[in-house]
View 1 (cartoon, rainbow, N blue to C red):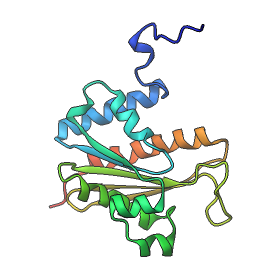
View 2 (cartoon, rainbow, N blue to C red):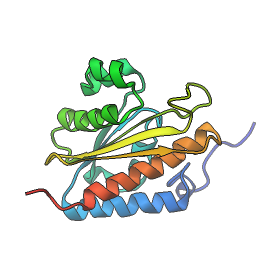
View 3 (cartoon, rainbow, N blue to C red):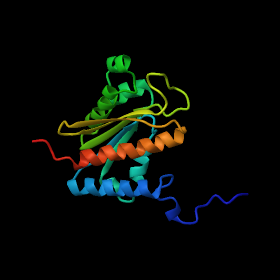
Length: 184
């Protein structure tokens, strides 16, 4: 019988993320802590990896408020309040839906100050000429009404790679909105 025990706790810290990505998560949480911000997530194609990375950092509970995995359109609508008409008109993988997801997190978690949303096509199937595998939309919203959007067209070199690049891009947008000055 194979030994499945873990020899040290340090082997799991940050797994399955690279040390660089884990370090960025630590820095983001330190920035949020310094600014008194609580962070939340709404994830589709990343399936909770952004929240998983943030909560892999010890002590993250004083900064991470919570998150939602809203993989289906129905979940985006029922959990986050993304309007069905928006989903029908633009599709789940779109700027308007990413923005609505980020704003929906803040509506559902009134103690969160900033939120990030991820929606895209990680593959290997599900792509189309208009929305190919590797297309991912991101939005970050702040309680004061600021919303940022980013879109990436990642190389289709596998589902895992697209999802991990999406985690990094989501962190970048969170870093940006957490570091942004508060609108007057």
